[in-house]
Length: 283
Ligand code: AMP
Image (cartoon, rainbow, N blue to C red; front, top):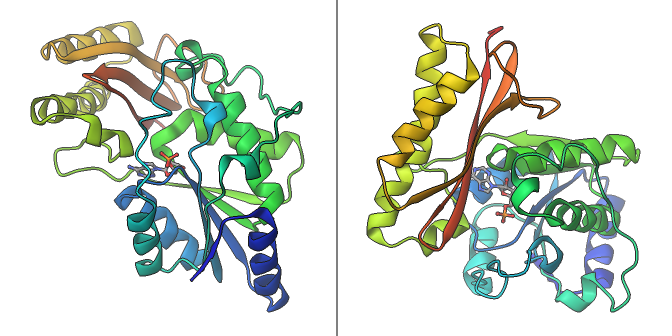
């Protein structure tokens, strides 16, 4: 496995692989790798001949007062995980590789970045799309792999790629969960044991929604209220939003029909956690 700390170095490794006719897969991450990331690496290894994993805690997607400084950065352990799971090239740039002092160009996807996480994290998606555009330009992958766990991010990146005619395919992989349903996340390590137990209620609330829909309920306000009531059973959970939106436009809907995204964001202790499910009533 090659480890590249500079743009020049990753470009030359990728160029060599492409020269051998290899299909390039990119898995963008912020490190602190876990089984969710590994599932993306595995998907990339299945569909591509050369897997590039980027590890970069992107400063521009964190707002003031968020966890940029304390975000875990266990680089050696991450490299070991990459090595053991079929990665060919790790790209782990220092911040000054990715941004110069006078970065004046930003990628901003409109509309889709406004609801859900966009409300409480202004500028977050601009940071995400800008860094992904940079990574796509640096690595020039055939396919980039993202997780359904960050549903809005996946939709926003798909839109960017389509709008800017970026020559790559985006593949979205399913959310990997702990046995109690909690979506695996690098931020779960911020939770103390009590908070960790309570955090399972986020997925419980999503399951509650699915059960209600299966039982014939369609009115979103009623379902959202029941989900909130369930979450309120745990006093450690501070709800940021519980939303049911059209899975394509992310617009609020009054009644469940077709493909909908059910999404929750909540703070538990020091961690802000998000999760979601897709419900498709046509299936
Ligand atoms: P992050 O390092 O948190 O920026 O995540 C990097 C990529 O891994 C993103 O595309 C995430 O959506 C994806 N990811 C994170 N957690 C999970 C999970 N539990 N299951 C599947 N994909 C995930």
